[in-house]
Length: 153
Length: 284
Ligand SMILES: Cc1cc2nc3c(=O)[nH]c(=O)nc-3n(C[C@H](O)[C@H](O)[C@H](O)COP(=O)(O)OP(=O)(O)OC[C@H]3O[C@@H](n4cnc5c(N)ncnc54)[C@H](O)[C@@H]3O)c2cc1C
Image 1 (tube, rainbow over the protein chains, first blue to last red):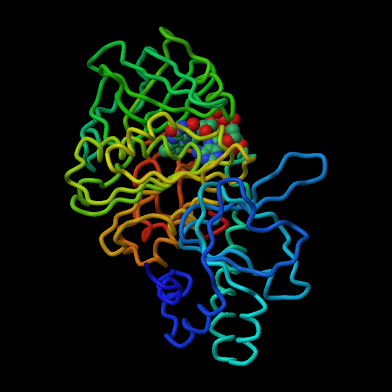
Image 2 (cartoon, rainbow over the protein chains, first blue to last red):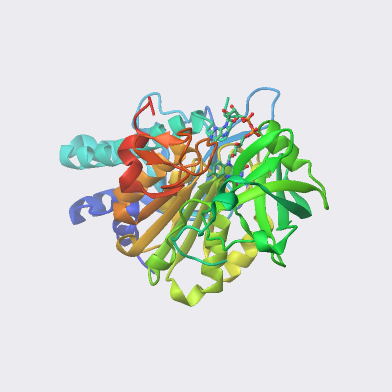
């Protein structure tokens, strides 16, 4: 079986990562499996991790009071999930539910923040990767808000 | 269905005069969308049709609208999948077996599928946009060996607005990767959630060997084309169908003009490189 360093280096989110950074990042990571329906994160709870999805699909959800749960987005194998661990107050904004069997590399946020503070080159590399995904999801959300399939009027 | 880019050679009468066609079947696909199978009452009115082309369908006393060909029926009929959005499409969606409507055509350019034999094929559609692309999927299915990886990326607003879902398993069984997404869903949905361009990130194809065919809301097509180009797809190999409103269908009235292009005559299928700049002009 591959070790976590190898899995980190091969995951699309970390494409082109320097070998020494892969080792540092892998040191904060562990493998985890979530059964269908299990929650990777709950809105309002401490955001101590982020996830690299290796297999399966995760639904980002919100449950407005008195209404059914609403899925906002899905994140699949090859993608990253979770940036609440990066910024205070380190709290999840949404629920994240496994839609099927989900395999992830789960990273300890406090551990990684410590390494980023100590090694600004690592921190900058990581920030650029997170920023790119954030911008992409922001653009996707804007397009979603346009409701392009609605009536043409 | 004959495939080619040549326009049907039509006499002046064919172009202007709707002929009587008869509804052979009417199938409700989803809440507001119906597929009609229609046949000319007089077999001599039938013309070869290529995937991507459209017919002008006329409901007597109501009006005439362009509707793409979404397939061929079991006999000599044409399939049209119509979404009820206004007076004419409402009347079309309420036709029954044996009813007569007027039809002229086919008109417009076709998807250049044959030009991309040997390539990977990406078919990306939003909402009713899968209707003009279904003939491309069927064309590829019939000639599966002539194309490499084939990917269908399809999205709609919500799960109950997805078209042709019963066909997806057959497509998958033939080795086509079918990825489906919706903008909004509840927990009963287990597919992707998000806009169609996000599906490109899950699709398996060789970017430098791919040809792409897009149809759907214009904004979606713009973002999709950009996503494909960003991934490395050659812009000249991206084709899209522009389905803005039109009247005469033969380049006379100017209703569908987009800058120098007549969508009815030069399109509706265009290479992305030819319309990219025009599509970004708000006044057009
Ligand atoms: C080449 C081509 C192929 C088409 N193929 C299909 C198809 O396969 N299935 C299908 O359901 N529809 C298709 N359409 C769209 C269809 O022609 C229109 O929905 C129809 O003309 C609407 O007429 P109506 O009388 O029902 O509604 P109207 O009352 O005329 O219009 C209802 C509303 O839709 C708007 N509208 C009408 N046509 C268009 C259009 N083309 N683009 C943007 N807004 C429009 C109107 O401005 C109005 O706001 C196609 C259009 C073109 C140009």
